[in-house]
Image (cartoon, rainbow, N blue to C red):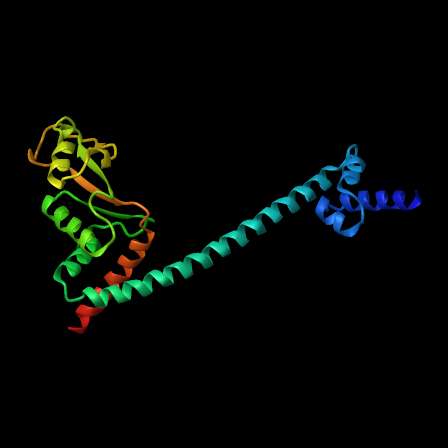
Length: 225
């Protein structure tokens, strides 16, 4: 019984020092249920509570840092594979004018700071060329991606969504909710304006990584000429 009493006293002392259940169990050969019973009515001072909270938060922070480091390592390994593929594909297609055109268009009008491959413009001919590029040099077709139209308020009821669907030959189900942008004028300065269409390629981190490298390779290629 004395040994049990000594273990209890030691456990309480460690608890007051701010040790967690896990750390105390590593020090003492007792059951967790025994600790729960011993600490049930144990009054902790405000300082002791603060120590426990600080230690808990520190453990959480270390866990998050470890997870973040693991994610970064995984991302670097993944992106290395994507870049290796991109270099091979650039060599394969570098003599194709459409390949260069699509890269240049994305360089000018594509999103480069987010985690998805987005291209946006109001020129239907440019949109058509870029879709042909996607279908020629990636695994995507115009029926695999999403679209979102951005319109100014005066054009809200002109049914340009349907016009774009017919123009591109895609289902209306691929179009996300149209974004209406406020207009201080309230009149149509350009009556034939059909809005800006954004092409949104899903699950496209790999394509974005490749595109960023293709842009750099394209610039380097032109500097050599």
